Length: 588
Image 1 (spheres, helix red, strand yellow):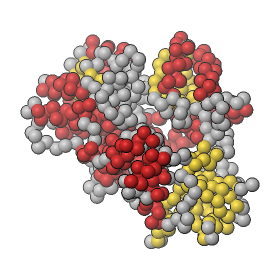
Image 2 (cartoon, rainbow, N blue to C red):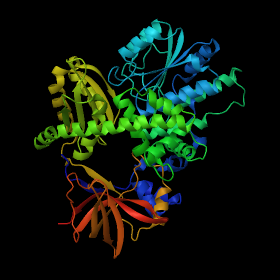
Image 3 (tube, rainbow, N blue to C red):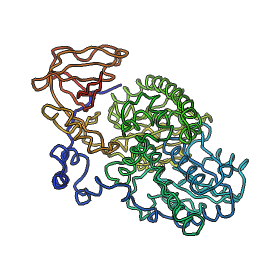
Image 4 (cartoon, helix red, strand yellow):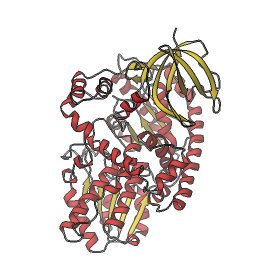
């Protein structure tokens, strides 16, 4: 299924390159910065790269924030119950925890008046769904205040039912808003991507929106005399905001807010007195040393997301809220078990998808549409992402819903092909096939009538073919050019000054050529430990998942071309630089 990737050097934005040098960045740092931004970012480069939490955009710029605060104050003043409804992924779960801690510990709302509702991915589906609405109507007290987290912008019909039943609904979200506007049945829709929004940063995560809403409520409570002016600020919650921000893969290049909250959140996670969740997850995922953004993205977030993929995300929220290590450890273990189960399901689904992928590649399709009749809806998205990575093409991955006449899909893409815009075009051409759809530039979801699958696949492929006309489609490994001469640990520190890394602000990768002087399989045989003769000196390297079948793709004595990251390898009290190979191939 995997196509041979192209090792490509990032183009540099000349104005950004010069602006970075003017700010005092080294030539190498400036090169890396200029490979991730466009020239229009040059005038604001200092703001983008050097802003801290003191420079965060305040909540006053968010649409409907004043209305949301007044509705919240009225509910607290009258002693109404508070219902928190959130998405089931890490962004939604962390936003749920932020809201609960803020209302319980900062706004003095008794815990028994705070009720949690989290949709089940398989039974309920995304958003304020019909099933979730029925459950709230059947069991929740009223009148009550309902606050959504990381969802709700497209759920007017269900929100209208809640409003008619005596609930006051506030939406906090960061997903796209329908052309007809935000849900009018909600008293407020606090969403930075609304067309009428004056919030200058449309890239923040759902948990960030929820946190800003809570900050505005705190200010409103103080102004109303319901909290003392010295009441604690909510900066202590930025570790949760950081986790949700990194896990949701929002933009870290164009958003000074995202960079600032991740940096502050990481500092909180690395303090001796930190939430038990971070200690439990670090131990379980074997994350040695300091927690960084890569730890969040590749170790913590998969564990948190696994619970919502396979079952209820309520345990993820409980883990965030845990107050001791003995409480956190068993919850984290449950997530670890779910993650192992998710890996097994994912492996099976990817294996089953290979024939379809190969057939569509042979047919020259610019976008792939996969249907797994036995697929698990909770794992569609990650399977789609893996196929995008392997083929360099947008992917829609379908599996059946409980209703035999319906299918659901998760969609993933590569930079430049906008998923939500594509879905809007397909829905406009075949409205009778769609029950629900939504998303943003990089990802989306759809519920489709089974009979519309072929029409969807054909239109999805045609849109991609038009978009990519004249381009060679293949997976690409974007690098920052040639590996610097004689790389050492000092160089690694120079690169780490540009952290936190993440989506659109990827960790540096370099290209190089070398001779393989030693290699041996390690782990289960799929990983390779290498020694490379590089610029006259031997260099340690590791290549994870170098082989799918246990056969080495490289041989001793070969001259190879490779792409790699730089990392510190601590072994028996000694620190050495190690190359982490991302791809290697013999030079013809």
